[in-house]
Amino acid sequence: MAATTPSHSAGWRPPRLTYTTSSRFIVDGLGEPLATNAAVQPSLQAGGGPMVRLEGVTKSFGDNRVLEDVDLSVPPGSVQVIIGPSGSGKSTLLRCVNLLEPVDSGRIFLEGQEITGKGVDVSEVRQQIGIVFQQFNLFPHLKTMDNLTLAARRIRRMRRSHAEQRAMELLRTVGLEEKARQYPHQLSGGQQQRVAIARALMMSPHVMLFDEVTSALDPELVGEVLVVMRDLAKTGMTMLVVTHEMQFARDVGDHLVFIDHGRIVEQGKPVDVLDRPREERTRRFLRRTLQLADSLEELEITEEGGVT
Image (cartoon, rainbow, N blue to C red):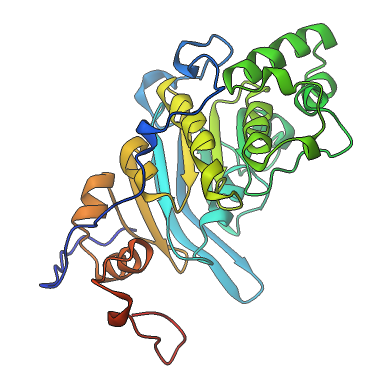
């Protein structure tokens, strides 16, 4: 659970963010904003309950405890951003929500129904929870159109004509309508990631998970992907986003969670966690990530190999 005891440090200063605000990105070629596009129609949980809820989720790989008693509640239509150092359990958390990894203990609920119990239709659950990875995972031998429509035709038994019509609407939304007949190797990294997002939306998911989707991209290509994610958030899609893009977290996120060693150290509104973190561990992470020191001269390598 998140710690609650404030521990402000006299040397702490709010982050100096110089990264271009995602809401100011201007990307040529992007289509109709998702917020006005009928191809994207997120589900809203009736009754005001959380769309996704984790209760005491624990996960280990051998002797390595990756998640430790994680509780998390994600309201419908919200954007929850998860940050933390490498190896802290962020990606594993998303993979557990999507049932790509079984939990050792604890429970996960989707729209009020437990999805970690016995007898759950895993395929049906995964159709309701879209996920986009750092690596694009497009089929290299299939054209963009077929990458989008394959699962819809085989799992949903959607007619090819219907599937291709929907795929074209989504490609138009992410600004890639003209790339429908090209292969992945003919696309830039940013374009491939936008195709991956459109593919995840093909199944009309109720929740979207993003696992560091810009980490493998050249800096100049990051903006076009963040714009698509920002516009998707405007539609009311429930989103869990693991990212190192702090400005995106600030601008788009409704709730920010900092995880370290498999535990939630701190959480709250992005502006509060980023500008006024309560926990020393959060401050140290942000100091490193946002390079808040006056100069690199102030940073030192510790005996453990970290930076302080």
